[in-house]
Length: 149
Image (tube, one colour):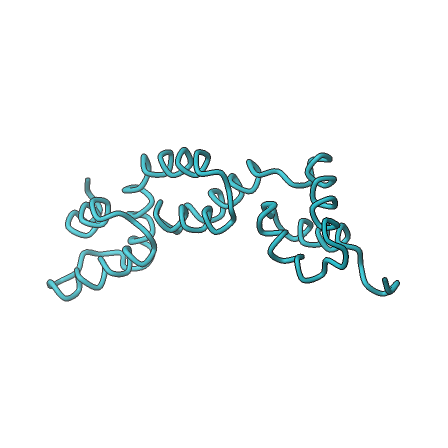
């Protein structure tokens, strides 16, 4: 092993210093740097035992960063891509769905500010919210209702 190359644990700590990462993300990013089979798993086990890798913190971080701008469906996709536990994802998404209309209304207000004048404008606004991962019911309530519920 060359001295100018950081260890797997060092690489993992550098990644964790930038933002929270799940174990699955770290495995995916560091697999190519593993010289000895099992070395990566041991390094990640050690970091997890010391509390550097924490799936709950990853989940909370993603929800906190992304929920104000994205719907529950998009947040679910991001959490699944991080390899988090399905039960934890389901609970986080259920919590987000309770505020889906309010969050969609805020995203809509920042982008458009006023109801569309015609059907083409409404369709554009609906597509915008759909690409952000908001559900159909929330989209209809926001676009059809404008500022009121």
